[in-house]
Length: 350
Image 1 (cartoon, one colour):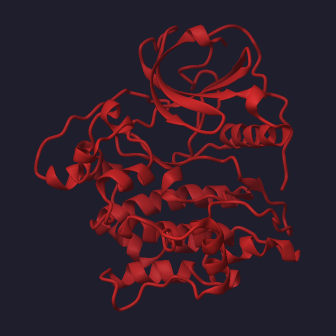
Image 2 (cartoon, helix red, strand yellow):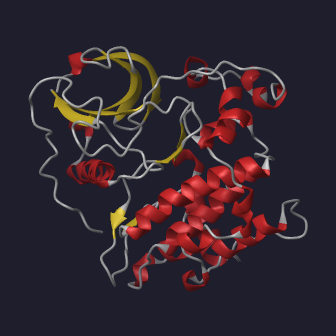
């Protein structure tokens, strides 16, 4: 594989050690289709952070589920690692909240549909002994055709049967109390993700998670020492939504339902298919070029355009995710005959 197989377009994301670009495929039957290219500067990574990259790629490679983001291929180019992935051209739900729904999403059907899709991916994760450990709106990606993907597996971990994780990791506002107290040698299991899912549900309807206005260390102390966030009489939400959220946000992990049990909750009777997300959300969003650096004037655009037509892009990235064979992967074979440099990744446990 080589970098000449892809023509980088605009930058759509960045992090401490790399960038994400939209790109066009330059070679093969899918020439001029668009993908996302995550470019990681390996020289800027300490050795322990390289483990994080290996873990993320390993999890994507081994996952085969319509709600888990996958990658087409990865290769090293000089000092860079290039990861070729489906283009999620509506970005993250976190950014959509930030720029278009600062007060939260009020359409309960839309919220139920998004959360159910996330939960289906999370349930797959847990069934395969994986903990995500950073479930939040910022790690939920949306394609232009309304499909929801759980992403960012850099802190995910394989949980061996009968064992608990003990690493203090995640994002403070979404972190479960037992993760904060993980140094007590008891550790935590899949139920930590259920807490984060409950916080994410609040985030979707309020625009931000609880405690967001505080600095990180204070948030950690508040999560550890305060009563869990609960929705009550003063919160103008459907009773089935309140019951869903409150069941997730129990300080005692054993009292939280599993992802499989949550899927049977009454609130998810409201959920529709991804076409509903497409009609009621993605068609209201501007093209990706406008979403990269959204000016203030775009805030509230979705609410103002509820009854108007909006541009909709379809890049026909039919491979989506889950391809396991060369014949199923439309981007397999692009580039040189180099072997994937991460083929020999060993499983990394917590």
